[in-house]
Length: 212
Image (cartoon, rainbow, N blue to C red; front, side, top):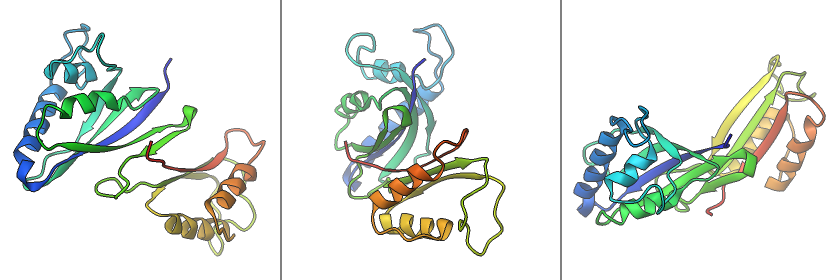
C-alpha cells in the first residue's frame, strides 16, 4: 500500500489573466463532480480526469495516482485559489505543470508532506499564498517532561500539530511549551528527537520545509 503524500496547491495569476484563472477553476469544479467511468468506479476528483480533460494520456504520458480532496471556491476579484490533493508517495506536480501550460499567465506553488520519505516541500519561497515553513508534530500518551507547560496545568497527553511561517514563531511557541531556550533549528530538532526516545505510541519532531 502506497504512503499518502498530502499536497496543497495555489494557482495564481496577474490581474490581467483572471478570466483564465476562472476558466481553470470551472474545469476543476466540473471534474470534482464527474464519476470516473475510465476505471469504472465513482471517484470524483481523480487526477486522471484532470489529465483527460486537458488532452493528456494518464496511462502513458503522466502519472495520475491521486485525487483532488478539496477545491476552494473562487472568490470574485481574487488572483488565486487553492486545492488539496492526496497522491501516492510524491506530489506529482508534473501533471499540474502540463495543465497550466494550457492557460495563459497561470502559475502555481505547492506544499507537499509525506513523512515516510521525509518529504516536506514548500515552493512558495516569497510567501505569496502558502506560508508554511515549519511543522511541529508531537503526540504522547505518557507523562510529559518536567518543566513543560510552565505555569499551566499539565495535560494528560500531548497532541500537537502546528505550522509556523518563521523560525522565530516556532521558537517562541516551543519556549512557552518546554520552558527551554533554543537558538537554532538544529538545537530544537535534536532536543525533540531525544525527549521521548524509547516511549511507545509517542513521537516529537519538527520539520523545515524546503523548496524542492
